[in-house]
Amino acid sequence: MYLVKKYKFWKDDNHAILLDVFDTSMMEQKLNYIHENPVRKMIVREPHEYIFSSAIDYCDGKGLVEIQLLH
Image (cartoon, rainbow, N blue to C red; front, top):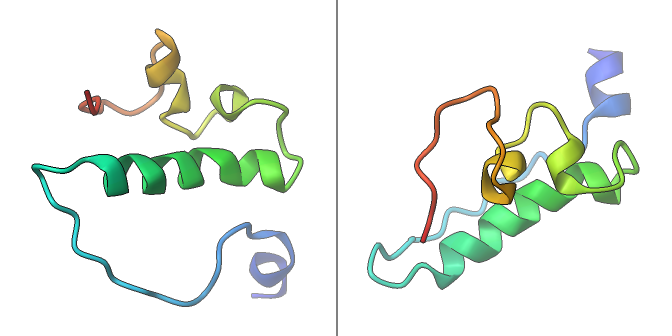
């Protein structure tokens, strides 16, 4: 349990928001926030360098998980 608290890069709170499928601006904002987390914590220099991120899929690469890109 101690390691999780020491090394995680997310917050323990939960603030649910409604994501409108017809207005993707909020989804894009949240996706960018998630992609930037490893950068903010200085794990990687660029979001697409984090192996467990879908950011590489948005840079014409292929990540570890199958995703549907937001257009």
